[in-house]
Length: 267
Image (cartoon, rainbow, N blue to C red):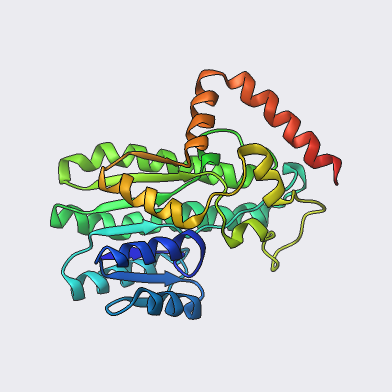
């Protein structure tokens, strides 16, 4: 049984579909109940859906406990729900920072704290947290997003070592730009806006290449999960960028400066 957060669209939807094709029962959760139900129906017989705001720790824990009591096990949890926020850091207000921290960091943590004790008790399970290539290096003009994804990487790689003793596996998924609706989204509309934000699709393409098909991401991610890879960087060009950043940080710095200058020129 696999529980997926943010399963109503994008990467979460595709992971849900791919897991169900492998014969795994999928629990699709999303803050948008209608989207979650639609994806569950696409997954076929046996899949279920629930509305879930990952910021609500009590609701998250209650849902996971209920799922465990019904199914007697939790094999996978994909802590995938997340949002993006961009702009010049000095123009991004506290409310936007709080929102992305609550969803991208606390939402993942709430999932871990709900599922990990159960997995320790059952002596098995795999936690997969969705971070980003932006969690492995700099992401200028996307500082709030990069902040949260670095935190997810740190949590995941640290917990992985602790969890070995209990038979629990932990992986962190770090994709570059993926062809999903988030590329064409904007900052949360219910919070104060910023004067300017980069065009996400254009800027990420400049930084890391054209968006990668989400279907390919899901298949490659599940193959890596089966091998218990600790840090899953997709696609291959993203892995190259990651390695270059570690070996030649000044090169990544200079190329990022050029990309930022180009994006700012259209302001």
